[in-house]
Image (tube, rainbow, N blue to C red; front, side, top):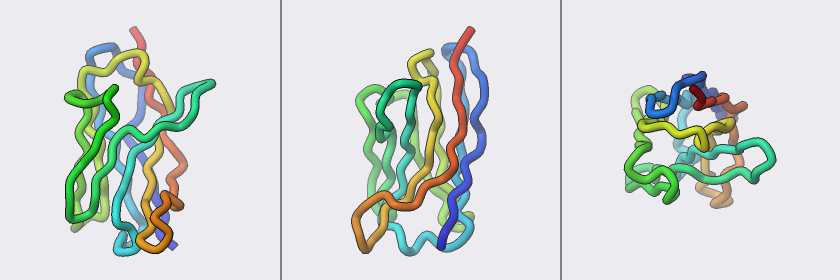
Length: 118
């Protein structure tokens, strides 16, 4: 089974940038999309950005124009470039793969913490 490992989180000041990476341990041929989710304390997990393998991208309204999702097929890695970060972006960010079979995001990484604070 493919495992996903996120990295790149940390503490950044408002207005700063971070790039998150999600490395898959094997081929992602079983996925038809990859997504970045986040969960802030006391809040539900929300989908932040989605990349359809071989297709386009979608973003939550709250991050449009600031975040960009991309993928490197040769490295089986998905990235989330986050610019103009705000304190409300503070959360644990998770990478997930959407199964071609079930249509569900059923493969998850362990998460990486992003904190935006002065």
